[in-house]
Structure formats: structure tokens, C-alpha cells
Image (cartoon, rainbow, N blue to C red; front, top):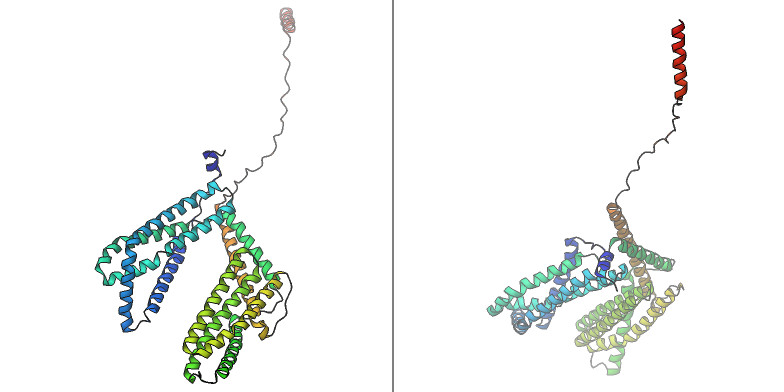
Length: 414
């Protein structure tokens, strides 16, 4: 079994990012959800006219009064979730061990933390509006608003933690750059155009089909439901706006599926298609409420949209298989698939540039943190063996005595 010391030895230091960079998207998303809540409330009361403002205050007071008793519970639940996410992010490097697995887990947990905070924004927005006209709710806001701000600060703290260490992020950035380059190579040589031109041309074609179907409906009805010109123009404008929105979504679908058929991109494309279906249904309802024949004409144009969607899916699969498709005519989805190619190419180029920039920053950061190698000591000349001075042999003891006697004899003779 893995001991605690071994786990600590395998843990890596936690990298941090700037507070401002982490706080900016959290604040922007919170403001966007609050604005969306206000928009929905104003649509429920019929706009922002003088009478509708009182209706908005009354509706917000009713919603805020019913939501306030549950707001404290929701704040407690989100606080528990955020603290659990913070502990999981810090401890994932010990439990998982694999750096890239840690990165994916930390990214997913950061997304969950942001969504948990955003889930409280509609209730907080309604409670703030209700507190303007209800003194009973102001006391509750003295508790809920500071807690909400503290939870937002905790989300920012979670986002200041980098999802991985620098070597792991560098490997991921290099892989993203390589994959984006492969997508650019696959899309090279294919005709691509801008989104605006494709939306205008395709929406105009669908508007013509809408008018033809509406004219057929009027002929079958015997002309009894002919609207006045201003009403017909207003309904047609509404239909064209919604058709343009649906075409824009189909271009996004084409761009997603041309890149790769990964589970994430396939899920994105499915979500886009559901969004297109919702927009189309809302457009039929809105245009039909203004002019029945135009609404039926827009419904009849749905057959062309179905064929266009099938063409988009077929062409995206051909591109993924490496088959370069020809530029089709407008009636066969040519502008849409060409715009999808251009969108996919621009997205791949942006991804490659962003990944290259991140990789360069990470390399510089790693170079700054890596200590410089110590300077080696200068090489010294090899030691030269110096021969020892020759030793003078000392005379033996007997020789010394004979020498002394010889010297003494010479002295006596002299």
C-alpha cells in the first residue's frame, strides 16, 4: 500500500495564476446571468413601460418572498460544494498521481464551481429587486449578500489554481498546437468564405421559399386570410431574423464536426442542433402570431432546412475522412458548408496561435525557475613529478674509525 510519506513525496507544487485573470470571467458570467434574469422578468411583464415597471416590482416581490426562505439553504449547499471542490483540487495530485489526469479533473471541478455559483444568481437578483419594495426582505439580504460575495471570492480562489504544473501544461499546449496544425492541413485547399455572406444568401433563399409556401396557402384558402402589407412585412422580417439565426447555428455545427468527431465536439454539435430546433420553433410561433400564412410558410421552409442539415452532416464527414469536397451551389448548401470551412479554419488558426503563445510563456517560466548550472573550476596543469635529490650514502661505522686512525697517524709522523 502507498504510505502517506510516499504520497507526499510524489506530490507536486501547486501553480497559481493572477487574481485579476481568474476574477474577470467569474464577474462577467455573473453579470450575464443577472442580465438574463432581468430580461426574462421584463418579458414576463411585457416590457419596461411605465405600468410594466410596477408589474415587474410586484412579480419580483412575489418571487423573492417565496425564494428567501430557501436562499440560506442554497447558500449553505453551494458553500459545501465549493469547499469540497477546493479540497479535491488540492488533493487530486496526491490521489491520481498522473499529471494529465489531474489537469482534466481540476478543469472539470473549476467548471462545476462556476456553475454552482451561477445557479444562485437568479434568486439573488430577484431578492435584490424585491428588497426595494419589501422592508421585510432587506434584513435577509444583510446575511445573504455578504455570503454570496464570499462564495464568489472562493470561486475566484479555485480558479487561481492552475489545473496542472508547468511541464504538464506545456505538453498539453504542444499537443493542442499539433492537433490544430493537423486540422489546418486537412482544411487546406478547400473553399472557405465568411459567415455573414453565407447567412445573407441562405436566409434570402429560405425567405423566398417561405413566401412561396405562404402564397400557396393563400391560394388554397381562397384569399380570405390575406394580411395587410405592413403586417406581412413585419411577419416576414421576423421569419428572416429567425432563419438567419438558424443558419448561423448550422454553420457552427459544420465547423465543429469538420474539426474532429470527438465526444466533446459531437456533444457541442448536438447542442447546437437542439438550439437551432428551438429557435426555429420559436420563429414559427412568433411569425405565425403576426401573420398566419407567413408562419405556415416558415414551417414549409423547414423541409429545406432539414435537407440543409443533412448536407452539412454529410459534408463534414467527408472532410474528416480526407475527401476534399467541391463548392456546391447555394441551393445545395454551398454557402453554409463553405462558411463552415472558413469558420473551422479560423478557429484552428486561433487555437494554434493561442497554444503556441502558452507554450512560449511556459518555456520562459520553466527557464526562469531552472537554476543555472554551476561554473566549473578552471582546469589545472597536471602535476609534474619532481625527482628527489640524490641521497649521499653515509659511511659505514668501521670506515669512519679507520679514517680517524689514519689521520691521527699522519699527525704523529708530522
